[in-house]
Image (cartoon, rainbow, N blue to C red; front, side, top):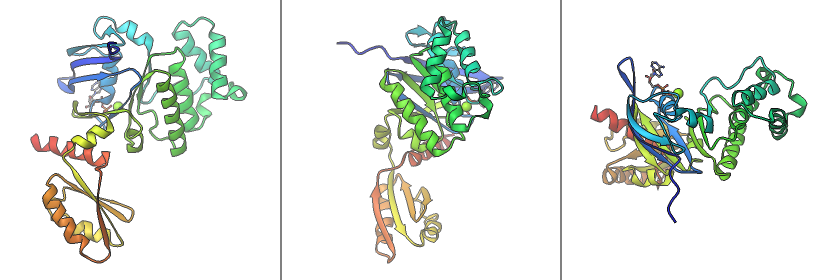
Length: 308
Ligand SMILES: Nc1ncnc2c1ncn2[C@@H]1O[C@H](COP(=O)(O)OP(=O)(O)O)[C@@H](O)[C@H]1O
Ligand SMILES: [Mg+2]
């Protein structure tokens, strides 16, 4: 049996705005049912890449397909099969819940609009509140409505641009449960986020900085491929210890976390001897841990800055 064609397959996509490169030769392959997490600092090119992938922007360079359609020539077909939740605008705050969903159904030219909207409101458990203005919903409910609106036309691919920014932890967790349900139904999801707990819930991750895709793989493979070693130090006075470690070259990253200090570096041998010395002091427990995604992404950024 041959493997199904990837849902997204792009090569060398680039896009400049006013002569400034926003997306720099990005190549990417995403398979059906993947939850692809897209990470990177503000201004690194996440939104621009997402807009290139769904045919909303035309690349200056590069080729590719999305859902089997050519990015350059078949943008219209792509747009119809993609659900896109934009970074800021999700729906009209001054329309009711029902009016918003009905509006989306009209845009997609859906027949049996009323049935589709009724079913969506029922799934949301919002039948009693369907005539409430969308702008009066809480942050978590707004995200649920936005996700419902962008899945109304049963897209095969969802592009979610920082969907949970500013949403409380419980609502973020519920939102991610929904994403996993959608993926289990075979929908492919590309989701940009700044939250590391969300990154850990993705089947694959891409890290972009200054328009370049610096890493791409499963969370496990990114950990395995990183050249980082990380140690955790537990103790009562880890902040002072952290300050003294700043003068140790092998301790490239020092991150306090409550009563724990995470120390990472690429010179494993030198870092280990530093850790052995700390372990001999009273009041500290030292043990090697797997590098955290955050440490890995910080390292990728440092490495890129070093080469510039
Ligand atoms: N429509 C636009 N016109 C001009 N510059 C843009 C436009 N969209 C994005 N940019 C620039 O492209 C770069 C990447 O932006 P963006 O893709 O929004 O990054 P991210 O989503 O990762 O924050 C930034 O420098 C941004 O200012
Ligand atoms: Mg953005």
